[in-house]
Image (cartoon, rainbow, N blue to C red; front, side, top):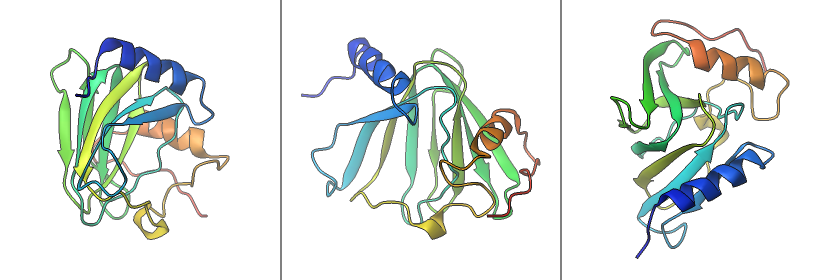
Length: 162
């Protein structure tokens, strides 16, 4: 039996707050080959998650604690939806269809989400990251993370040339 409880959420928050990338995860599935990947992910404000897609996989996020935004984009980077997931709020989860450009931004400390998607695990290929945003570690990541925080439906991202 696997339990997702407040002590686990607190442990993940502590690990994420002290991690270089300001995020961490806790797998509930037994291996990368499992047909259903299930995990808890903790993300702190300031973490940068480059928008991406999963060509053959839907992705379900349920908020356990904290506050975040999930953005969906068209191929050019225009925001087509912006959904706020807040623990104790109105919207608690969202399923992103396969082959949909998406990204998240963390709005509050101790944000932890449950993620579920089809396995097996495969690392995201470069072609499945958007070309209009910087890769992790780039000097402009904070600028894009801030834009994700404020972007509205119809907005287009800042110009970025790799």
